Image (cartoon, rainbow, N blue to C red; front, side, top):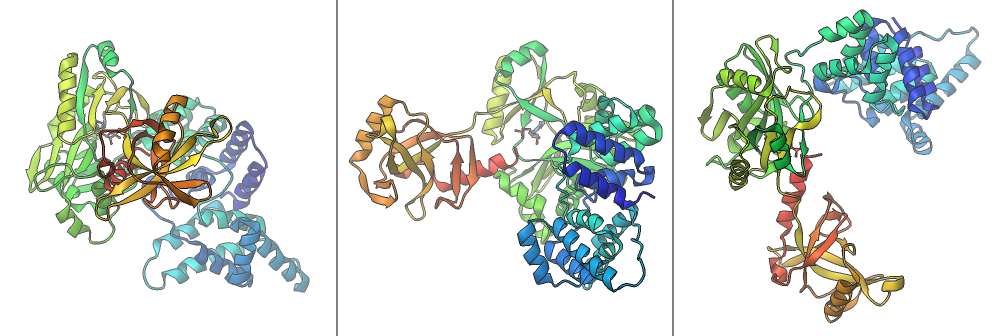
Length: 568
Ligand code: AMP
């Protein structure tokens, strides 16, 4: 067993380092020292995780619980702990100070020298595991007792990192990249080999242990396993999809469904579902579990697809509806009945014990078609996504418009020869979709410019419309994208509509003029009464053809906002 102190000392050293080369060296040293059984735990710990993200296990320790445990272990009151956290800004530093103080007092009153207890890395993990697995009545106490045990058995330095780990915030700045490089360095294997092993296992802990045990050979043997999600292959936006298709000669064209990505694992009768972030969402989607169980005719399979929320006629609903289904914890059955899901499958990575990711897309597709039985039952459906292989650009354009008309996002253009590259974004999957929309917004405020523009109105507050109340709700200010000539023209137009100073420097403007505004992103914001703000808004032009009531309603802002969410 490796002592937790080894881990704590590495953390302490890394905290003082700023360069990633030196950090990698220290992490590699730690990985080399740790025994193989504890290597997966250590690898996750150093990345601020107690359990691998894909496991779906939650630690479930909040600050108040942690403060209580620290209070019990040290005798300090929760209030004094809270006060110290406010001063230090860190629970780790607080734990260190409080336990140091306690040990000092103990040493004063104690007549004999007390040896510090040795805590191992696996013991720390075990206590965290025990704390995480209890639920219901009395679980608080069990959690506190396990944490208290850890604080009682650790040195103040170790306690610092235990406290931080309990909140899964180690604050040493070690991420996947550093750990991947550290594994390569520690066990003398190439980074690319480590990277590949990571892509198929999705767990650097497993990769580290294999590298230590069997080096290159063991890493190459690591493969996809059922019920452990693999990283998803990602797509790229292309400025010139047509040129790419010409290069490929023929491309596989599919609709780009407007829903949420889902990875399906079927093993006999058991089905597990993972989201785009590889979180386990099985319990929220019993209807999908059921449809997969019935219509995927394979003993074991891992499938990739898009889940779309539909209405009773099978038409796609707004994107947030599918998110509601994915995040649901309560009344799951009720939601399953009211928001049916269409499951569109477009890839397969594993079938009946065989890994398929190194086969070309067209081969994988044959395997996919061989095991999925398309079916529709009361708007709930499962189907393999239609695919057309073509080099005919007119046909591609036609499919693109069909997809948009059907309420989807556009098309995917895939290289028929390409392998499935987990976690990779590349040219083998291209997306074609309309550019980010603009919003038509009403000018409701204006500010005078500075310097050369001091005599001109340089910045305009814009608002969307709320049809129910006939109000204009502010969403941002725009001053970019307006040339001098336009600025003069706008100033003349707006001057006649100006009222009093609303807040310092901002004058109200009677809502009459509609601007078309481009932007990079919509964000939630308490600063404007719409509840949203535009990131990098840019003036495109005046919509002289639109009355203020024809400006974009707040509902459209909400829609565009939630469309973006899934790209994050
Ligand atoms: P984006 O989220 O804009 O990067 O686009 C890629 C996403 O489109 C994927 O992650 C899937 O969730 C989704 N998608 C919808 N239909 C398909 C399809 N036929 N093939 C691949 N991805 C698809």
